[in-house]
Length: 208
Image (cartoon, rainbow, N blue to C red; front, side):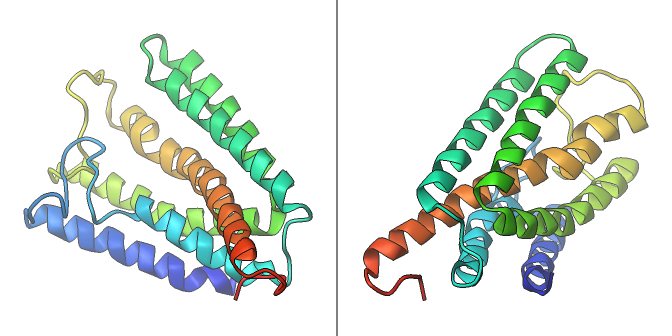
């Protein structure tokens, strides 16, 4: 668990800096208060960086059993996650879409624990430590109508009350779907980084 402490603190700091920036109306693309606003300040971009860091830390002591197989499983998991996201973004009743998205994302998540169990556990821990604070910030922002991307809603979003809205747009994504993204993307990037460094450093057996 010690390996995830500093990366998690960095992610929390980025979340707080972005929140400050949106409240203070910093310029785009540094921050973005729109719905799902993509911006430079965002913890989604940290996943690839920390995935490589975690993979390098694990490579010598707990590498995947077969790196090529791990990459194939990671790619399969990513495809499952993308299919789930595609289904979720289509029109139609919410419950069937969320159920299929959950099933596909969960299947993709499980494949990562077959690909590289140790890295998957670290990424899952990092995912929760970095995303639970986001869920808390979103709760406060939605309660206070802060005008940030943490409480922004699409104009077509149905009026279903605070708690159902919070569960749908903040709690469930931060407690499951973003963790699935973190593990799936993280294992794939970590495996690819190890494969590239192993090729670049032949005969040395592992990345430095």
